[in-house]
Length: 121
Image 1 (tube, rainbow, N blue to C red):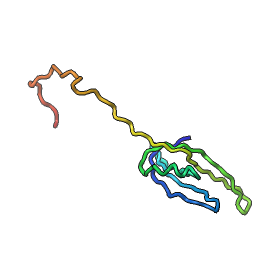
Image 2 (image 1 turned 180 degrees about the vertical axis):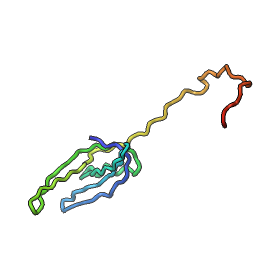
Image 3 (image 1 turned 120 degrees about the horizontal axis):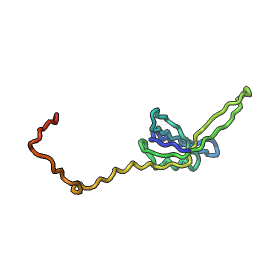
Image 4 (image 1 turned 180 degrees about the horizontal axis):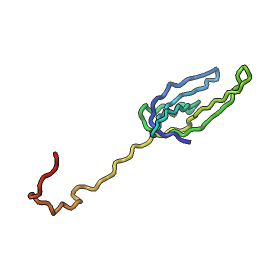
C-alpha cells in the first residue's frame, strides 16, 4: 500500500527499553477533497530513511498495516492498529510542457488597422 501527500511533520527518533527499540513518526497530509493527516511510524533501521526529508516535501510512502491484540487486567481484549512505513520516495514536480518557439508560428495576415478596438481594457 502507498500514501501520497505532503510532509506535515517529522518527529525526532525515540528509543524504548533496554533493547534500544527505535521509532520515528512522520505525518503526511493527503491531497484530496477531504485531506487526511496520516501518521506513519518507521521502526528500527527504517528510522534513518527520514533523515533526508523535510517538512513541505511531496512524498510517496510505502506502508504496511499492523494490528495486535492486548488483554487488559480485567481480561477484556483491546485491539490496536499501526501504519508502518518501509520506504519513502520524493515525488517529482510535473515538468512544464515544452512549447515550440514563437518563430515557428505563421503571422496572422487578415488583420488591418481599420478594425475597431473593442477590448474593454
